[in-house]
Figure 1 (cartoon, rainbow, N blue to C red):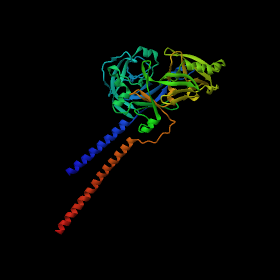
Figure 2: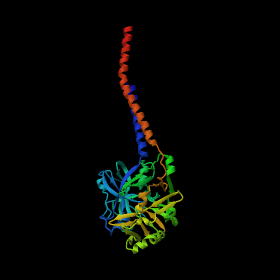
Figure 3: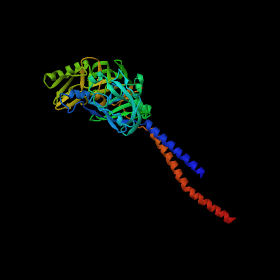
Figure 4: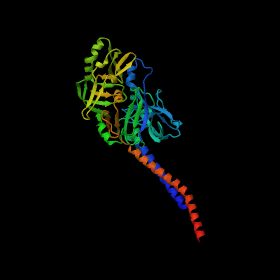
Length: 442
Protein backbone atom coordinates (compact mmCIF):
# COMPACT_ATOMS: atom_id res chain seq x y z
CA UNK A 1 0.00 0.00 0.00
CA UNK A 2 2.81 2.40 0.91
CA UNK A 3 4.61 1.50 -2.31
CA UNK A 4 1.45 2.24 -4.31
CA UNK A 5 1.04 5.68 -2.66
CA UNK A 6 4.67 6.54 -3.41
CA UNK A 7 4.23 5.57 -7.06
CA UNK A 8 1.02 7.60 -7.26
CA UNK A 9 2.77 10.61 -5.73
CA UNK A 10 5.59 10.34 -8.29
CA UNK A 11 3.04 10.22 -11.12
CA UNK A 12 1.22 13.31 -9.82
CA UNK A 13 4.53 15.17 -9.47
CA UNK A 14 5.47 14.23 -13.03
CA UNK A 15 2.11 15.47 -14.33
CA UNK A 16 2.54 18.77 -12.50
CA UNK A 17 6.04 19.23 -13.93
CA UNK A 18 4.81 18.50 -17.45
CA UNK A 19 1.87 20.90 -17.09
CA UNK A 20 4.18 23.60 -15.75
CA UNK A 21 6.57 23.05 -18.68
CA UNK A 22 3.68 23.25 -21.16
CA UNK A 23 2.48 26.49 -19.59
CA UNK A 24 5.98 28.01 -19.71
CA UNK A 25 6.47 27.04 -23.35
CA UNK A 26 3.11 28.49 -24.32
CA UNK A 27 3.57 31.65 -22.26
CA UNK A 28 7.11 32.53 -23.33
CA UNK A 29 6.39 31.92 -27.00
CA UNK A 30 3.09 33.77 -26.98
CA UNK A 31 2.46 37.24 -28.35
CA UNK A 32 0.54 40.05 -26.71
CA UNK A 33 -2.19 41.35 -29.01
CA UNK A 34 -3.76 44.68 -28.03
CA UNK A 35 -6.59 46.35 -29.91
CA UNK A 36 -6.14 50.00 -30.86
CA UNK A 37 -8.64 52.58 -32.08
CA UNK A 38 -8.30 55.80 -34.03
CA UNK A 39 -9.55 58.82 -32.12
CA UNK A 40 -10.04 62.27 -33.64
CA UNK A 41 -8.76 65.41 -31.93
CA UNK A 42 -12.12 67.13 -32.29
CA UNK A 43 -15.48 65.68 -33.18
CA UNK A 44 -17.67 66.21 -35.18
CA UNK A 45 -15.34 66.70 -38.13
CA UNK A 46 -15.69 69.93 -40.12
CA UNK A 47 -13.84 71.44 -43.06
CA UNK A 48 -12.31 73.94 -40.64
CA UNK A 49 -10.82 71.33 -38.29
CA UNK A 50 -10.23 68.54 -40.81
CA UNK A 51 -6.53 69.28 -41.35
CA UNK A 52 -5.84 69.22 -37.61
CA UNK A 53 -7.82 66.00 -37.28
CA UNK A 54 -6.12 64.26 -40.19
CA UNK A 55 -2.73 65.29 -38.84
CA UNK A 56 -3.41 64.70 -35.17
CA UNK A 57 -5.69 61.64 -35.11
CA UNK A 58 -4.30 59.28 -32.51
CA UNK A 59 -4.04 55.54 -32.22
CA UNK A 60 -5.25 54.72 -28.73
CA UNK A 61 -4.85 51.57 -26.64
CA UNK A 62 -7.23 51.20 -23.70
CA UNK A 63 -5.63 49.35 -20.81
CA UNK A 64 -7.36 48.35 -17.60
CA UNK A 65 -5.21 48.96 -14.53
CA UNK A 66 -5.59 48.19 -10.83
CA UNK A 67 -7.89 46.01 -8.76
CA UNK A 68 -10.97 47.95 -9.95
CA UNK A 69 -9.84 47.78 -13.60
CA UNK A 70 -9.73 51.51 -14.29
CA UNK A 71 -9.70 51.98 -18.08
CA UNK A 72 -6.89 54.31 -19.16
CA UNK A 73 -6.45 55.29 -22.86
CA UNK A 74 -2.80 55.46 -23.97
CA UNK A 75 -1.62 57.23 -27.15
CA UNK A 76 0.79 55.17 -29.26
CA UNK A 77 3.92 57.27 -29.83
CA UNK A 78 7.14 56.68 -31.75
CA UNK A 79 8.65 59.86 -30.31
CA UNK A 80 8.72 58.56 -26.71
CA UNK A 81 10.50 55.52 -25.35
CA UNK A 82 8.83 55.49 -21.95
CA UNK A 83 5.25 54.43 -21.32
CA UNK A 84 3.40 56.30 -18.59
CA UNK A 85 -0.03 57.29 -17.27
CA UNK A 86 -1.27 60.51 -15.69
CA UNK A 87 -1.95 60.75 -11.97
CA UNK A 88 -4.52 62.87 -10.15
CA UNK A 89 -1.90 65.58 -9.49
CA UNK A 90 -1.66 66.58 -13.18
CA UNK A 91 -3.45 69.92 -13.72
CA UNK A 92 -4.91 69.35 -17.21
CA UNK A 93 -8.64 68.69 -17.05
CA UNK A 94 -9.03 66.94 -20.43
CA UNK A 95 -7.12 63.83 -19.34
CA UNK A 96 -8.19 60.47 -17.98
CA UNK A 97 -6.30 60.07 -14.71
CA UNK A 98 -5.46 56.98 -12.71
CA UNK A 99 -6.66 57.01 -9.10
CA UNK A 100 -4.18 54.79 -7.29
CA UNK A 101 -6.15 55.05 -4.02
CA UNK A 102 -8.88 52.89 -5.55
CA UNK A 103 -6.50 50.04 -6.31
CA UNK A 104 -5.67 47.56 -3.55
CA UNK A 105 -2.89 46.08 -5.72
CA UNK A 106 -1.07 49.42 -6.17
CA UNK A 107 2.50 49.65 -4.79
CA UNK A 108 4.93 52.57 -4.98
CA UNK A 109 8.43 51.76 -6.19
CA UNK A 110 9.50 55.36 -5.52
CA UNK A 111 7.42 57.00 -2.80
CA UNK A 112 8.58 60.52 -3.60
CA UNK A 113 8.35 62.00 -7.12
CA UNK A 114 11.52 62.02 -9.21
CA UNK A 115 12.41 65.18 -11.16
CA UNK A 116 13.20 64.89 -14.87
CA UNK A 117 14.26 67.63 -17.26
CA UNK A 118 14.46 65.83 -20.62
CA UNK A 119 11.13 64.00 -20.77
CA UNK A 120 7.51 65.00 -21.46
CA UNK A 121 7.02 65.19 -17.68
CA UNK A 122 8.87 67.06 -14.94
CA UNK A 123 7.86 64.93 -11.96
CA UNK A 124 6.81 61.28 -11.81
CA UNK A 125 6.54 58.30 -9.49
CA UNK A 126 7.32 54.71 -10.37
CA UNK A 127 4.88 52.04 -9.25
CA UNK A 128 3.61 48.54 -9.88
CA UNK A 129 0.06 47.30 -10.20
CA UNK A 130 -2.10 44.72 -11.94
CA UNK A 131 -2.46 45.34 -15.67
CA UNK A 132 -5.00 43.75 -18.02
CA UNK A 133 -3.92 43.35 -21.66
CA UNK A 134 -7.09 42.04 -23.30
CA UNK A 135 -7.48 38.59 -21.72
CA UNK A 136 -4.02 38.52 -20.11
CA UNK A 137 -3.46 39.54 -16.48
CA UNK A 138 -0.05 40.79 -15.37
CA UNK A 139 0.49 41.30 -11.65
CA UNK A 140 3.11 43.63 -10.14
CA UNK A 141 3.72 45.22 -13.54
CA UNK A 142 6.07 48.28 -13.36
CA UNK A 143 4.94 51.63 -14.78
CA UNK A 144 5.36 55.41 -14.49
CA UNK A 145 2.77 57.66 -12.83
CA UNK A 146 3.20 61.30 -13.93
CA UNK A 147 2.46 64.03 -11.40
CA UNK A 148 3.48 67.09 -13.48
CA UNK A 149 3.88 67.60 -17.24
CA UNK A 150 6.68 69.68 -18.70
CA UNK A 151 5.65 73.17 -19.83
CA UNK A 152 6.89 72.67 -23.39
CA UNK A 153 5.01 69.41 -23.79
CA UNK A 154 1.72 70.70 -22.39
CA UNK A 155 1.84 73.93 -24.45
CA UNK A 156 2.97 72.47 -27.80
CA UNK A 157 1.06 69.22 -27.99
CA UNK A 158 -2.64 68.62 -28.04
CA UNK A 159 -2.71 66.06 -25.23
CA UNK A 160 -5.72 63.90 -24.68
CA UNK A 161 -6.18 60.43 -23.29
CA UNK A 162 -4.60 59.04 -20.17
CA UNK A 163 -0.96 58.51 -21.04
CA UNK A 164 1.65 57.44 -23.57
CA UNK A 165 2.51 54.01 -24.97
CA UNK A 166 6.14 54.54 -26.04
CA UNK A 167 7.58 52.61 -29.00
CA UNK A 168 10.75 54.58 -29.71
CA UNK A 169 14.02 52.85 -30.48
CA UNK A 170 15.62 51.33 -27.42
CA UNK A 171 17.84 53.72 -25.49
CA UNK A 172 19.66 53.54 -22.20
CA UNK A 173 18.53 56.17 -19.74
CA UNK A 174 19.82 57.24 -16.38
CA UNK A 175 17.94 56.68 -13.12
CA UNK A 176 16.62 53.30 -14.22
CA UNK A 177 13.85 54.53 -16.49
CA UNK A 178 14.70 51.96 -19.13
CA UNK A 179 13.00 49.39 -16.90
CA UNK A 180 9.72 51.21 -17.50
CA UNK A 181 9.53 50.70 -21.21
CA UNK A 182 6.48 48.49 -21.61
CA UNK A 183 7.98 46.06 -24.15
CA UNK A 184 11.14 45.64 -22.08
CA UNK A 185 9.01 44.93 -19.01
CA UNK A 186 7.01 42.27 -20.86
CA UNK A 187 10.20 40.63 -22.12
CA UNK A 188 11.88 40.78 -18.70
CA UNK A 189 8.94 38.92 -17.14
CA UNK A 190 8.96 36.31 -19.95
CA UNK A 191 5.49 37.28 -21.20
CA UNK A 192 6.86 37.65 -24.74
CA UNK A 193 9.72 35.95 -26.56
CA UNK A 194 11.29 38.95 -28.33
CA UNK A 195 11.28 42.73 -28.51
CA UNK A 196 9.53 42.76 -31.90
CA UNK A 197 6.22 44.49 -32.57
CA UNK A 198 4.04 45.25 -35.58
CA UNK A 199 0.71 46.83 -36.53
CA UNK A 200 -2.28 45.48 -38.44
CA UNK A 201 -4.83 48.02 -39.65
CA UNK A 202 -8.36 47.45 -40.86
CA UNK A 203 -10.39 49.64 -43.19
CA UNK A 204 -11.61 51.87 -40.34
CA UNK A 205 -8.00 52.64 -39.31
CA UNK A 206 -8.51 50.60 -36.16
CA UNK A 207 -6.55 47.42 -35.68
CA UNK A 208 -4.11 45.41 -33.58
CA UNK A 209 -0.72 46.05 -32.03
CA UNK A 210 1.11 42.71 -31.91
CA UNK A 211 4.00 42.54 -29.43
CA UNK A 212 6.49 39.76 -28.91
CA UNK A 213 7.42 38.09 -32.18
CA UNK A 214 7.82 38.12 -35.91
CA UNK A 215 4.99 36.85 -38.13
CA UNK A 216 5.73 33.32 -39.42
CA UNK A 217 8.39 33.17 -36.75
CA UNK A 218 8.80 29.41 -36.76
CA UNK A 219 9.82 29.07 -40.38
CA UNK A 220 13.41 30.17 -40.88
CA UNK A 221 13.14 29.75 -44.63
CA UNK A 222 10.12 32.06 -44.82
CA UNK A 223 11.78 34.66 -42.64
CA UNK A 224 14.90 34.75 -44.81
CA UNK A 225 13.08 34.90 -48.14
CA UNK A 226 10.14 37.15 -47.34
CA UNK A 227 11.38 39.42 -44.60
CA UNK A 228 13.81 42.15 -45.58
CA UNK A 229 15.23 44.33 -42.86
CA UNK A 230 17.34 47.44 -42.48
CA UNK A 231 19.18 49.03 -39.59
CA UNK A 232 17.55 52.15 -38.16
CA UNK A 233 19.53 55.33 -38.77
CA UNK A 234 20.32 58.20 -36.40
CA UNK A 235 18.29 61.17 -37.56
CA UNK A 236 19.24 64.62 -36.26
CA UNK A 237 20.90 63.04 -33.21
CA UNK A 238 17.58 61.42 -32.32
CA UNK A 239 17.01 57.67 -32.05
CA UNK A 240 13.88 57.36 -34.18
CA UNK A 241 12.86 54.73 -36.73
CA UNK A 242 14.70 56.44 -39.60
CA UNK A 243 16.24 55.06 -42.76
CA UNK A 244 17.62 56.14 -46.13
CA UNK A 245 15.78 55.88 -49.44
CA UNK A 246 18.25 55.23 -52.21
CA UNK A 247 15.88 56.83 -54.71
CA UNK A 248 12.64 58.76 -54.32
CA UNK A 249 10.70 59.25 -57.51
CA UNK A 250 7.28 59.84 -58.96
CA UNK A 251 6.27 58.09 -62.12
CA UNK A 252 9.53 57.28 -63.92
CA UNK A 253 11.28 60.53 -63.12
CA UNK A 254 13.87 60.64 -60.35
CA UNK A 255 13.11 63.39 -57.86
CA UNK A 256 15.68 62.80 -55.14
CA UNK A 257 18.44 60.38 -54.29
CA UNK A 258 19.59 59.25 -50.84
CA UNK A 259 16.93 61.14 -48.93
CA UNK A 260 16.36 60.67 -45.21
CA UNK A 261 13.05 59.27 -44.02
CA UNK A 262 11.45 58.66 -40.65
CA UNK A 263 8.53 56.40 -39.76
CA UNK A 264 6.10 58.31 -37.54
CA UNK A 265 2.81 56.63 -36.72
CA UNK A 266 1.58 59.79 -34.97
CA UNK A 267 1.14 61.57 -38.33
CA UNK A 268 -1.90 61.08 -40.53
CA UNK A 269 0.08 62.28 -43.55
CA UNK A 270 3.22 61.60 -45.52
CA UNK A 271 5.29 64.76 -45.16
CA UNK A 272 7.32 65.54 -48.29
CA UNK A 273 10.02 68.11 -48.96
CA UNK A 274 10.41 71.00 -51.38
CA UNK A 275 11.61 68.96 -54.33
CA UNK A 276 8.51 66.80 -54.45
CA UNK A 277 6.34 69.84 -53.68
CA UNK A 278 7.64 71.75 -56.70
CA UNK A 279 7.30 68.67 -58.90
CA UNK A 280 3.65 68.04 -58.02
CA UNK A 281 2.77 71.74 -58.10
CA UNK A 282 4.17 72.21 -61.59
CA UNK A 283 2.86 68.93 -62.94
CA UNK A 284 -0.71 68.97 -61.68
CA UNK A 285 -1.95 71.48 -59.13
CA UNK A 286 -1.02 74.78 -60.77
CA UNK A 287 -3.52 74.50 -63.62
CA UNK A 288 -6.21 72.97 -61.42
CA UNK A 289 -5.83 75.76 -58.88
CA UNK A 290 -6.18 78.36 -61.67
CA UNK A 291 -9.34 76.60 -62.82
CA UNK A 292 -10.75 76.77 -59.28
CA UNK A 293 -11.04 72.99 -58.99
CA UNK A 294 -8.17 72.44 -56.55
CA UNK A 295 -7.00 74.44 -53.56
CA UNK A 296 -3.69 75.07 -51.82
CA UNK A 297 -3.98 75.73 -48.10
CA UNK A 298 -1.49 76.74 -45.43
CA UNK A 299 -1.87 75.39 -41.90
CA UNK A 300 0.23 75.62 -38.79
CA UNK A 301 0.86 72.89 -36.22
CA UNK A 302 3.41 72.99 -33.39
CA UNK A 303 4.81 76.27 -34.76
CA UNK A 304 5.43 74.61 -38.13
CA UNK A 305 3.76 75.61 -41.38
CA UNK A 306 2.56 73.00 -43.87
CA UNK A 307 0.97 73.26 -47.31
CA UNK A 308 -1.62 70.72 -48.34
CA UNK A 309 -3.96 70.33 -51.28
CA UNK A 310 -7.59 69.44 -51.82
CA UNK A 311 -9.67 69.06 -54.97
CA UNK A 312 -13.35 68.94 -55.86
CA UNK A 313 -14.83 65.48 -55.94
CA UNK A 314 -15.22 65.50 -59.74
CA UNK A 315 -11.51 66.14 -60.38
CA UNK A 316 -9.65 63.15 -61.83
CA UNK A 317 -6.75 62.73 -59.41
CA UNK A 318 -5.50 59.53 -61.05
CA UNK A 319 -3.42 61.60 -63.46
CA UNK A 320 -1.10 62.46 -60.56
CA UNK A 321 1.91 60.12 -60.91
CA UNK A 322 2.34 57.41 -58.35
CA UNK A 323 4.54 58.26 -55.40
CA UNK A 324 7.26 55.63 -55.09
CA UNK A 325 10.03 54.98 -52.61
CA UNK A 326 12.86 52.64 -53.51
CA UNK A 327 15.33 50.93 -51.19
CA UNK A 328 18.11 49.40 -53.25
CA UNK A 329 19.75 48.01 -50.14
CA UNK A 330 16.95 45.51 -49.66
CA UNK A 331 15.59 45.58 -53.25
CA UNK A 332 12.11 46.69 -52.33
CA UNK A 333 9.81 49.38 -53.72
CA UNK A 334 6.91 51.09 -51.96
CA UNK A 335 4.24 52.46 -54.29
CA UNK A 336 1.33 54.76 -53.44
CA UNK A 337 -1.50 55.59 -55.84
CA UNK A 338 -4.72 57.59 -55.62
CA UNK A 339 -6.44 55.02 -53.38
CA UNK A 340 -3.66 55.39 -50.82
CA UNK A 341 -3.12 59.15 -50.84
CA UNK A 342 -6.56 60.77 -51.01
CA UNK A 343 -9.14 61.27 -48.25
CA UNK A 344 -12.76 61.97 -49.24
CA UNK A 345 -14.82 64.31 -47.07
CA UNK A 346 -17.99 66.27 -47.85
CA UNK A 347 -17.58 66.45 -51.62
CA UNK A 348 -13.86 67.14 -51.64
CA UNK A 349 -10.69 65.04 -51.89
CA UNK A 350 -7.75 65.80 -49.60
CA UNK A 351 -4.19 64.90 -50.61
CA UNK A 352 -2.52 62.98 -47.76
CA UNK A 353 0.91 64.37 -48.59
CA UNK A 354 1.96 67.53 -46.77
CA UNK A 355 4.77 69.86 -47.75
CA UNK A 356 7.01 71.63 -45.26
CA UNK A 357 8.85 74.83 -46.05
CA UNK A 358 12.13 73.64 -44.60
CA UNK A 359 14.14 70.49 -44.04
CA UNK A 360 15.01 67.57 -46.29
CA UNK A 361 13.42 64.76 -44.26
CA UNK A 362 10.43 62.71 -45.37
CA UNK A 363 8.07 61.69 -42.57
CA UNK A 364 6.03 58.57 -43.37
CA UNK A 365 2.85 58.42 -41.33
CA UNK A 366 -0.29 56.31 -41.26
CA UNK A 367 -0.69 55.94 -45.07
CA UNK A 368 2.59 54.01 -45.05
CA UNK A 369 1.62 51.82 -42.09
CA UNK A 370 -1.80 51.04 -43.54
CA UNK A 371 -0.38 49.70 -46.79
CA UNK A 372 2.81 47.93 -45.68
CA UNK A 373 3.35 45.66 -42.71
CA UNK A 374 6.43 46.78 -40.83
CA UNK A 375 8.04 44.77 -38.02
CA UNK A 376 10.16 46.65 -35.47
CA UNK A 377 12.76 45.15 -33.16
CA UNK A 378 13.13 47.58 -30.30
CA UNK A 379 16.12 45.83 -28.78
CA UNK A 380 18.45 45.82 -31.82
CA UNK A 381 17.04 48.94 -33.52
CA UNK A 382 16.23 46.91 -36.62
CA UNK A 383 13.01 47.03 -38.60
CA UNK A 384 11.89 45.39 -41.79
CA UNK A 385 9.14 44.77 -44.30
CA UNK A 386 7.32 41.69 -45.52
CA UNK A 387 7.40 41.15 -49.27
CA UNK A 388 3.96 39.69 -49.99
CA UNK A 389 4.83 38.99 -53.64
CA UNK A 390 6.99 36.00 -52.74
CA UNK A 391 5.08 32.72 -52.40
CA UNK A 392 4.79 31.78 -48.75
CA UNK A 393 6.00 28.24 -48.03
CA UNK A 394 4.11 26.00 -45.67
CA UNK A 395 5.46 25.92 -42.16
CA UNK A 396 4.95 24.13 -38.88
CA UNK A 397 4.62 25.59 -35.43
CA UNK A 398 7.14 23.42 -33.60
CA UNK A 399 6.02 24.68 -30.19
CA UNK A 400 2.57 23.22 -30.74
CA UNK A 401 4.16 19.92 -31.78
CA UNK A 402 5.98 19.84 -28.42
CA UNK A 403 2.76 20.66 -26.58
CA UNK A 404 0.84 17.91 -28.45
CA UNK A 405 3.63 15.46 -27.63
CA UNK A 406 3.42 16.39 -23.92
CA UNK A 407 -0.38 16.01 -24.00
CA UNK A 408 0.07 12.49 -25.40
CA UNK A 409 2.45 11.68 -22.54
CA UNK A 410 -0.06 12.99 -19.98
CA UNK A 411 -2.89 10.96 -21.56
CA UNK A 412 -0.62 7.91 -21.43
CA UNK A 413 0.07 8.49 -17.72
CA UNK A 414 -3.64 8.94 -17.02
CA UNK A 415 -4.35 5.71 -18.91
CA UNK A 416 -1.68 3.96 -16.88
CA UNK A 417 -3.27 5.14 -13.60
CA UNK A 418 -6.75 3.99 -14.62
CA UNK A 419 -5.37 0.70 -15.85
CA UNK A 420 -3.53 0.23 -12.55
CA UNK A 421 -6.67 0.79 -10.50
CA UNK A 422 -8.71 -1.52 -12.73
CA UNK A 423 -6.16 -4.37 -12.68
CA UNK A 424 -5.47 -4.26 -8.91
CA UNK A 425 -8.84 -5.87 -7.85
CA UNK A 426 -8.47 -8.48 -10.60
CA UNK A 427 -4.93 -9.31 -9.53
CA UNK A 428 -6.08 -9.60 -5.92
CA UNK A 429 -8.90 -11.97 -6.93
CA UNK A 430 -6.52 -14.10 -9.01
CA UNK A 431 -4.12 -14.37 -6.06
CA UNK A 432 -6.99 -15.45 -3.80
CA UNK A 433 -8.06 -18.14 -6.30
CA UNK A 434 -4.47 -19.39 -6.56
CA UNK A 435 -4.27 -19.62 -2.79
CA UNK A 436 -7.55 -21.62 -2.71
CA UNK A 437 -6.22 -23.99 -5.41
CA UNK A 438 -3.00 -24.51 -3.46
CA UNK A 439 -4.99 -25.15 -0.30
CA UNK A 440 -7.27 -27.72 -1.98
CA UNK A 441 -4.42 -29.48 -3.74
CA UNK A 442 -2.46 -29.76 -0.51
